[in-house]
Length: 242
Image (cartoon, rainbow, N blue to C red; front, side, top):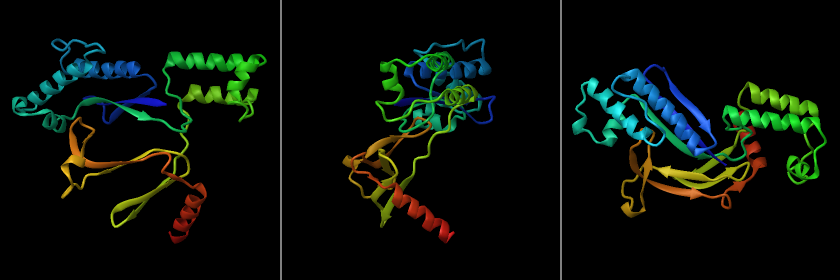
């Protein structure tokens, strides 16, 4: 499952503003809202709201005006230096969610989920839906009390994600293996590229929109050693040493 994370740094907000969205279009709308808040705070008279199709251009415009007001000559700055100098920004990242117990839904979608749960609770589940509720017989369906608890947690906020435990094994500064307690995908990014073959490097995007060269490698699901028992023994050894 892909989740689109929208993050913004704002004039009137002390930290980052973050939202999680299950749909890319909804994420663009959330990013547009943040950009329009920036534009309204900066100069609503000359910076009217933008729509979801051009929010990035609207963001660039307000950032350039903001830097000019701070005394920066934006004509002599490229995209990388502009991103580094600005203390306001909005960006969208797509991340893969594996084994999470959290739902990324908007209020309208949440209302439908709650209605479906209450409908499931009030009548006998037909065979086709029972197949879904049990994941093909893997689980026992939720009881009425358990559905009550689930609805309450959905109403009160996001569910707590289940922790993923990952161990990265190094030898001489090189990654020799990765152990996890479930199938996952891990990307290793090494920014120490001195002496590396330029043809083997990739441009890795950074938080502010610029990219820098790095050596990147992937450890796929098939190559990751899944050994929860070994990780438990490792944690016990670390706790004993501490």
